[in-house]
Image 1 (spheres, rainbow, N blue to C red):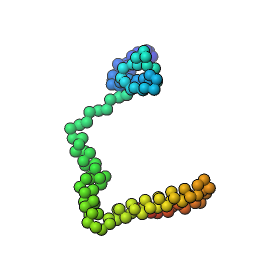
Image 2: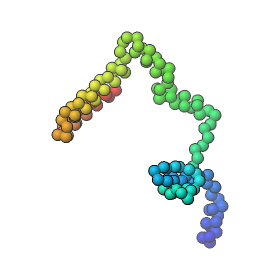
Image 3: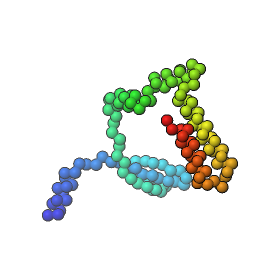
Image 4: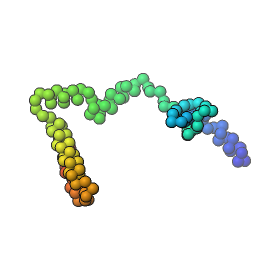
Length: 135
């Protein structure tokens, strides 16, 4: 009975579409290949890798929609750059400058203290960076 169930499961299961990947080494040279290693190479590792599905025809459109939703549209970046070139500092660049300045102060202080840093000092410096970098 168990053999019949096992055969039934094997017949129902879809065939696998995975491929084998072989990591082969010869001295310091390492190669990844789909064929087994040559006699001159040592097998380091072997595993199954499923191929990625082909992109659909509307995949570029989906990426463009995702970029717009994430706020990384190129036209938005262009407007920000042209506005900051007009002479006025943008609020984004001012915040980034404050953040970078706080990080630089923290690194300079840590370099000056060396290994004699305390938890309280680290906490104080990290809090200052957090306050400067939060949006």
